[in-house]
Length: 489
Image (cartoon, rainbow, N blue to C red):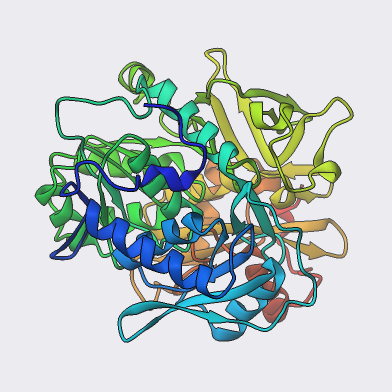
């Protein structure tokens, strides 16, 4: 099969065979002919309104076959897809639509995806049929930014991952391919990427309307899922749910969207006998660039638990002053459409903003974000190190450590913890500080421990650390001067 020119070609027109199941959601199954017909109908709606040729179209639909059909309908019209989370406030969706420069929005009207023209954006981006979609960054360090992704860049990234797995894209196989389970919103790049990845190898997808542990376990059994993807929050929810006793035949889970701590990976593996493999990518680069293959998982899935794996083909990595820097085939070929100049080294490597190290076997380990590193009176504190120690106490279900401004030392670490029971034991903070003193050098011990019902997380599960810093300042003042002397560096 010839390589697709665009992502839209991953749903052929006409589909072959027409009765092949492509999307399972709940008790409903969308077959290839039905999905293709729905995509054609949406494309006709767009053309009737003069939309195409790289025009940007916002899509605000819940998870389901209608959304997958709309995705391909937008591409068949030659337009650019802009996912908008239907669960987000209207004002946020309007801001993102304006930032992306959309000319129309697709919403459900009486159960049917319907195209509605939107006011002309103040700034109209250049139209380009090469742009497949505009995906927003996660917004952990500032407002989410629109990132245009090209058809060929995304296809190249998918094929790079497949090559590492020993799979030839588009190759016919005798056995029916295992479905890809999609446990996240299709307004997220992780969700869309999982659909595209499946269609690239001719596999169907099982889409969850919303993640829920028991539903996930039931879908794994029903569709005989042996490997899947999960964000850290979902992994923790499964491990915490006493009603989930077995996840057979699941063997591998790739953790996506946010960092997963080694201790949480170990807890999930010990509980279910399922190997957890981290992976790594950035929206700006079109998807996953570092990950695991089956051979590495068999050889190192236990002793390298917590690593994000090794670079995919065409990806180069190095460490500069503790920061992970990468260079990809798309970067070298000019296939990255977003301006990365402010993050490039003089010799053309991208500074990822992530602290990392590479071991002797070439496996990459993420140590935290550069922006999260705490400078306590000249001593560097990695939040992840402190968080792992606090988790090892067994007294908390979740934890995040942030640097809070302090007049004398510059910054001090403050730990926000989610106790396993609420209200928390009155001596919880003292217990955790004592535990940290036993395990860490003095300057890494948190200046304060703050119990909290739940950590603030964004849609993809990343902790909103800025909110925690603001909360620490609001409750204790900017100086945090009442630090016991034995905790000072």
